[in-house]
Image (tube, rainbow, N blue to C red; front, top):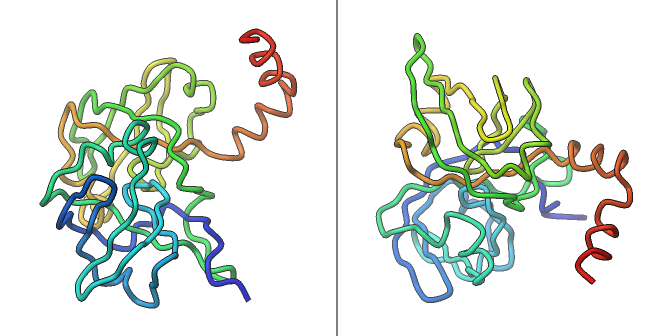
Length: 208
């Protein structure tokens, strides 16, 4: 009945390559994600939920709104850049990661990358206003990749990248200083809202 739930899991299906960038669109080369895709479908590009507006032989184009450019790292893409791709999860699809909406909450900056055995530890700077939602062993999506937080503070958090993640996402080629899209766990938002039900109305009243 429903083809797309507009929900993602943070399990990247393939790495795409940016083919072209227009004033309001980005064209990406992909293969696996084109299976069954059609204009109007949702797709996560570096974790940002975007709408496919056209499909050609070896790729697809998505519409980019000004807000998307401002609030994500999509606006800083260049031709040839690698991007993480995930189709929206079918209503009856198998759930493999965590609940990811494709609504980027903030852009973080890679503070350091340290090798630890076969893994790499990424430490990422993030805005203090979303740090409240992070807990050790909790989930976070980084460029659309579902990862487990191994430590966090009011200004940073760290995640560990295993070999498979490095090989199958663009986090394997990430460098210090690069910007990444961050989406916090939706469950954490609901819990915070439950305990502070008047937070938003209080802010609106203050602004008024």
